[in-house]
Length: 355
Image 1 (tube, helix red, strand yellow):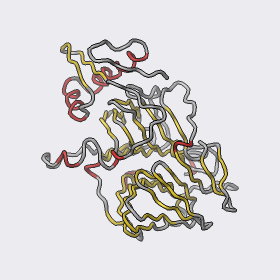
Image 2: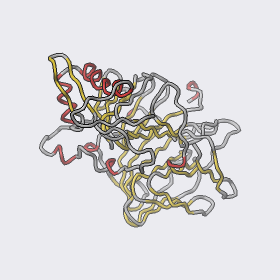
Image 3: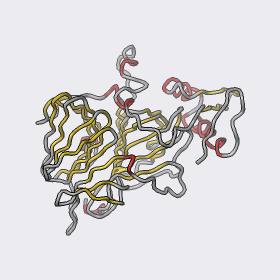
């Protein structure tokens, strides 16, 4: 994938770049003309619009590409470009939306409270069965001398570290240092504890495990940068899977080689993966307009863009969380100056009639 650089006062290159930049005009027409564009400009000042005719709007995105080896920076999950402080003079205003088939939960609407049986930790449940989901997504802030509690009986847990670090003590008595961009999957009914002696921010997915005769999932520990990029035929985004695609696992969070702890406590390489990390450069978008039976839980880790959910088009930024019900039409386009990266939950490997 070639980089595209724009010099001020010079025309943009043709070909692939032209395709990327025209996505902005298409989005403006879908959103509904100048009023929608004004809203998009207010929410995303990095996107610039050139109004050259009454019914035609254009936008440009300078200096598009992140370096391939650039380290992830998830600070905007808790300190977003549009932070809650920006809405202090707009009483009652929020970008959050809840509908029967999707929800957008934005940072100014997050409510943190003590987590049951956790020590010195606060959590904000961004997705829960109250929305219609069969899983939870919880943004957790561990403070000094904090400790986790076990999930409920038969509930599996996936942990992804956004900021700081946490120590995972597993059932074999082995300690694993989980720094930012590290993750851990802990099967249901498996003892473990997360500890932190300083501030750490985690996102945790939990669901009641749907068992399959003869199959047992195993503990997995890894980091995003160790996961290989996977082929995405017909698409331009970069995909990494974090959990195995094999039958024992009933969900994935998209990003490959994970590290697996076996029954004797040794660490072994594992070459399948399915919890997902998806990366889009500015101007890139999904070719597929997806409608499927799977549910999604999404946390935007970096960047900004436009998300279509049903008949609605939402400007989104790092720190926004999205729940997508089965069969809701969905589509994403990345905007701004830097890549978009999001963490995505998806239920897999189970017959929908039996779950």
